[in-house]
Image (cartoon, rainbow, N blue to C red; front, side):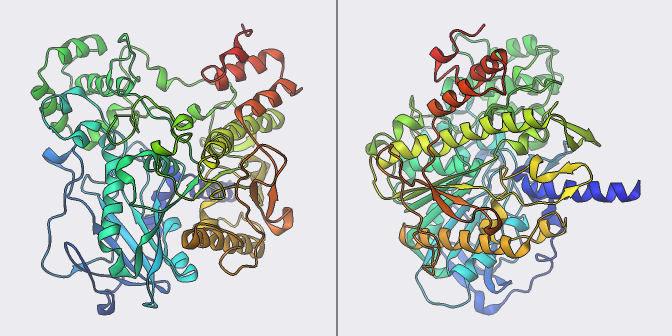
Length: 610
């Protein structure tokens, strides 16, 4: 039993390192951040005061530099404000607070004073160097920069770039549109937008523009990159007029984005224009019940409607971060459709990955465009910020979420130990992953390349070489799943190696070196080409037509195809055609999946379904 538990612990650690939402947890075990020594030669000036960093794995590092004032008290749910200057040299050798979030056990971690960034730079003082600004993932509700996976020391040292990472407000502290917060309190359209976390990221880009030259970085050559929700946020910056000219290239890893209408973010879910089940109004209902000021949603709604804007602002600001976060999961009398779970398996779509989360990224008309979605925004070069861009996804995106989805796996201690039905698992993950690629890569590339030919690049990450644990084939369970590419991009495998589940370290190292080289060359020139040393497979740009041409770079181990270009095109239409011809589904199953995937975008496809 003890040996089995050890194996299960190894499995748990492997999966956890791959889940972006959980990566921050392991940072507390990192030996690299314990008691670093500040070095006088790392003293650098910033617009608000001097900072002193330390030597981190062959690079200079400065951690926990404030880029905005703490968003606390009356600054909660306001656009980020300037930092108060300091007079003495500030120690920058430790990560800052992570922003408030719920961990896996339901406990609250972090503090609202969390708007800080980190910088890694090569020790050689030659300048200017390309700057890469990383935006972490975690569903815009969890995550932080402190995880060892995101440390930029190796990337900065080996690729001769300056790497910046940042924290931004999360969940209802980062995105909230309650009418009481903007009806009378502020004349600022930024304050009224509700997109506070988006504004945080823009404020960090302002800091880069003002200060990065003192860290040997080039403010005129800034690349933003992010994974998962970080990729969503990169796309939001691409369509934000406030971010124009504050970056010059973009990399979207496993991204995609929907701009939430203000009515969805604000309204009650039973209004004529329904709000999200966890809209600002509905979250306030839950807070009123949580504080025993109302018995259920009905009485909470009546109470809220009778409160003035000032009373509602005072009530919301008097809640602790923990109360706000716990209210997301509070069950009240009326069932919350966002929190329903089924015990039987169902075809996976992206919405399944984010239950019990407040809405985010609003089309407010100031920070982000109103009444528009990405396909229309990127079709018009006047409605977004055209720059060179890389769009990518992982071959088996959906499997990370399916591994923990009811009915797909048999579990022990709530962790998967066996795939319940391998054919169903592979079948459903194919369509969930292909839909992700269609929405987050190919459909966007088709729109973008019409406006910026030869500057749109696409990849698919295919690496899947892992060992099995007992009866569980981890390559089948996870494959090239969501977030798997992150240790390859940063070259940080310390946590992964502790599990002993990754195969062939030499091949893995080779692929990681290639990916870092492509990313850095793109940051340097806007074209990943053959990588920094010119020896890699030529990464060709996305073609400006739909003929059989190379369009996607497949990133895989030398043991399994290597790095090659592919002509494969995945669109919503091609996914629908594949589904129609797929004999692994019954007609009823095809209808069920089609309704979940295409009912909004392709209603004619599902009109004949019962």
